[in-house]
Length: 191
View 1 (tube, rainbow, N blue to C red):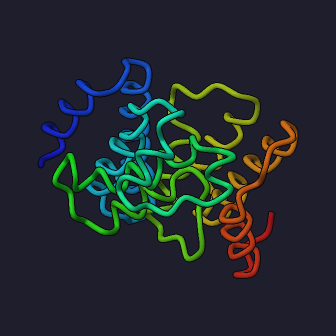
View 2: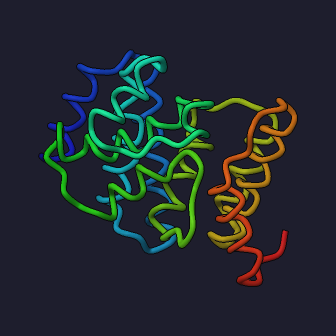
């Protein structure tokens, strides 16, 4: 399915606010892809469809994941909203006919990151954090980094921001986020 067909189907399935967010992530991902030499078409498509499973109510995400044989961990049970990422990756083929493993992986990792993130994974994670509709303390700083810093430095700041936010709310920190952040630090990128 081409981008425009995916966009039209997504628009028919998501609430307007979530759809507008998805368009913003697609646009932001395209810009970041150009800057970092990543396939822009893949980045735009992954950005567009990153939240495609947000059409499901949070209360049904565990059931939807199990129905598709997606593993559900105790952490997922505690925070079922996070399942929209692997569910969305699964639905790329199921609903949109997309079989590109790189796009699926980027969609699956857009909420918490993970080990061995590719540049596309990193772009989708970060685009979701800074798309034009996002408004939270620190987003301006992250947007500025997107214009001038190397990709890993951008991601390190993004992971740090995310972990700080989760800590302030007293919530669980996903180990995939910690792993992704630690990999960047171990590779020599400094805060």
